[in-house]
Image (cartoon, rainbow, N blue to C red; front, side):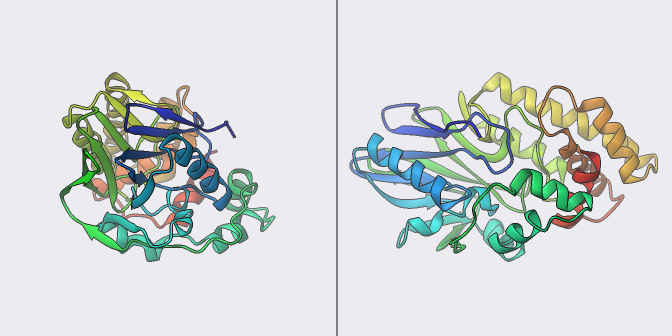
Length: 307
């Protein structure tokens, strides 16, 4: 894993950036003003979250984190929530509703250490086997919202944006208009292919358009290095190209596995984890009415078989 760093983006805004495309290695952010702070996402493990919180405490001169905004319910963005007891934890209503469908730390530990010979077990072991999920208690949101919600963090105005389904069943972004910064969660990936858990590639494209419409100049993706507008436009265009190709395969009646292999061959490029194109292809097939949305383990198996 790459060494994480807390990067100052303005006098009141920082990004926790891990210039890595590895599974489970995620970015986060914090806005701090007048001794109070808002945190955008935690980390995959307790140790990783503790490390991040120590750096935030140092950078913000001990500002108290009063609010945690959750971008979505995947564990690599939420499994450190228990280290912030008593804080308000906010996410979208759609995100909160999906929490009960998420894999648990215990289940992921079992899956990644099962030493099975099937493709799914081997894939899980390769990407998650080195993480320590011990001691984690999953803490859900204390409040939800829909649409957009403006909040104050000391003297700083921020806006929570309910992106709807895209990467996950319900994604949330944090817009800091005074700084021109968006924390995008997994609506954006830099350096790696996107994962489409929600079952809709079209929704992923719409989410990126919503982020661009803010006018932001700096974008903090859920994974990978910081992005500028040109990077985000390139990301959106890449999704659109995959969408067009996969939709054509769906309308042509090509089986999903064969279509995913063709999309993989055409669009793998130089980005990490091209096997994730299976999830994008499945999302385009669902959009076209060619299949129902697949369950998480079905998507993981599809990626594992393509890897």
